[in-house]
Length: 402
Image (cartoon, rainbow, N blue to C red; front, side, top):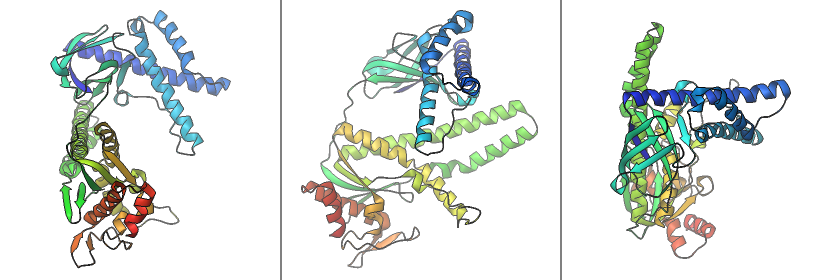
């Protein structure tokens, strides 16, 4: 759960100072690890650096007033960055070595446990509240928790719109489910989501196309930033950067809000949802190709990739999975590469390859429906087989071969 903080000017300056100290610690710890390996060939772990922090707090008054557990949270973030780096190396992926953090790349600082460095007092029904930070004081927090619980830990985050408090609580989330129907769900770009709840029974959720609406304004602000940088107008450039960050954050918030609303409505209205197990990486792969074998229609594919990412399919599927579990809704994920719902006729079961430009499907009786509707219908067929007691693999095979 996230609350927006409203610090006084003095408190805002103190938050900036504390955040910069945490960032300096992160960068110094990263430098220490690099130098230890470069000069002595040895690795420094999280426990070793926690001991170093004890010595730093004894020598530096600025760090002495900071919460010791909070400093360990910053070191733990660096440790997790290295763990992820080694995991990617072993998996043969792009390693992505941990980077030094500039001001705009360091999100904030955290606390291990409630009452140790921070104390949050929620308002009635967990709507709004007050946050007390050690060494900074008490400030108003505005927001509302959907599922209250026992406070565990917290992060104080700096964003373009100001300061925010992100709380982790121990709770048992639960959602009410009103419907008992089966739905086939086809995610898309032309239509954000297409639902099928029976033969020729379709529903659609419109794609808001947030990026397309804001794209021209973003381009103009990027051009303004470029002009300011050419003229070495640092104050103007900083102002434009802030405008771009705010607009980008506004876009992200609108996507997040739509994702939460749609997924909550879906799990509330259906007992079973069958959809494709989307691979965002595969869907948004570049068409650039190589020097020896250059790709085709690269610009068009780049535009499609932007449109795909604008709908946040990864977040959509993640939130749908979480909310389905909370509501007791069965979520069935179908591998689109094996079962090809978008290439299959929902009535005859015939599989025919369709290009991306082919947006309609003709049924055996001559009726024409959209490609997404046909795919959602195929997914609904799978749900029907599952409801009849078939195993998942049997249901997938029978629904497509029917």
